[in-house]
Image (tube, rainbow, N blue to C red):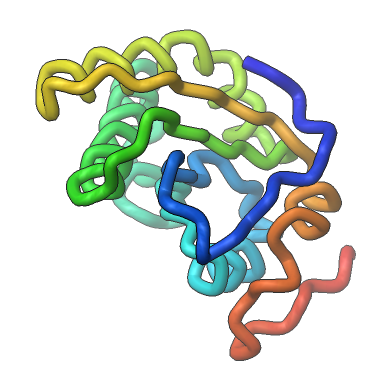
Amino acid sequence: WICAGDPIRVDSQMPQAEVRVVASCPEDHHDRVMAICKGSGLYKAFGKKGDFIDALKSGARWFDLWKTKVCQTVLVATMHAECSVVRILCIEGGPNCDEEYKSIPDLKKAVKDDMKKQNGREVEVVCEWMTMELFERNFGSQAKDDIPAQVAA
């Protein structure tokens, strides 16, 4: 995996060479990140406190469900896209995000294996771990206006 640095170019006129999936997001930023996903064409694979995966926080089962959710999101996102790269974005912060970060190597392998088995395609899987500030800088200008930027508490 890599740590994010340079802004990611988002251009709707470009052929879709990669699919971007947000897999991890702190609860405090859920609504803002959701709005950004809607506005920028990012796919959502992160959860929200109280959802079905959160309710099953019991060790490996929770991680297996999270990985499955990310893999399924990637499969759906790539169903009609001829892409060679799957970029998994993770926003740091919060206890769940920290645990998800530790499983990035397993997640990358699961996504690659699932893509090969389900779609018969090999893809490069890139995971980027970034702060909310960097995520906002890269994608925030494309957020839907229906959800305002959150003010840090």
